[in-house]
Image (cartoon, rainbow, N blue to C red; front, side, top):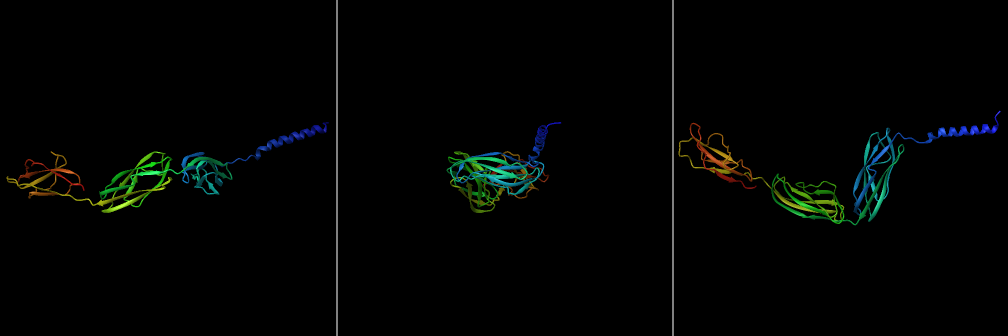
Amino acid sequence: MHKFPRSSYAVQFFAILMGLCFLPVAVPAFASSMAVSPTSIKYGTNPVNSGPYYYVTLRNSGTTTVSISSATITGAFKFAGITTPSSLGVGKSVKIQLKFVPKTTGNFTGTFSVSAQNATRVTVALSGSASIAGSLTISPTSFSFGNVTVGTTSSKTVALKAGTTPVTIFAATTTNQEFTLSNLTLPKTIAAGQSISVGVNFKPASSGSTSTKFTITNNAANSSAAISATGAGVATKQHTVGLTWAPSTSNVVGYNIYRGTATGGPYSKLNGGALVTTSFSDNTVKSGSTYFYVTTAVNSSGAESIKSNEVRATIPTP
């Protein structure tokens, strides 16, 4: 017979083995999973009270719906674009805006976190610094376009320059839609000490004087910089070229009129049947163009004479 202590040891050893066998059952395993990109953001140096924003993408990378329980952020940062509690379907994603909002100068760090009931928490590391607000210089600050033909566009250029710190332009609005800005994609950050060229355009829709004010919203000390512009729309003028010539001394039944855009031709005939008068009005000319005219005489058989001497007509603008 075995002694009692041997049996006791065997029981204890078996109990230990049983505990080891059941130990893995206590480890949680989530079929749901979240992923965030990017996992870190550096905001650089920005003016106090007006930092930039970036987006991160939160995606359900698992095989079941994620039950989001909370979203938090620390430091001089704030977030928008996600509410809690909420759910995120399989393969779905959401964009979240993370903004740097420093209230004082200095260096700042923070963490954005999203937690879920059935998935591991994800985080984004944040860092940035703040300095005294910079400045935005605009040159020139006003424009006069003068007279511009209705329906056409006149353009000028303005320079926007940042001071000793970067400047970010968030918006540019106009009080008159006949005036627009070009070559400015928003938001636009101008590096410290650098400048960009922006087009200022005027396209009048009707006759008369008009004006506008552009408001340039930015994060510099002059956060509402402005550009003013004036101009006048003038109606397109219909010009006419009047031609007269001496009658032919031969026996003719009429005349033909030809027009070209270069001296010596080629020429295009302007009239249909032969003209029985010795004058003609050309009202198909365009402002700013130059034309060259010749005439021929036509006899009863339809034969034409040689071309007359050439005359030139330059059309005014407008």
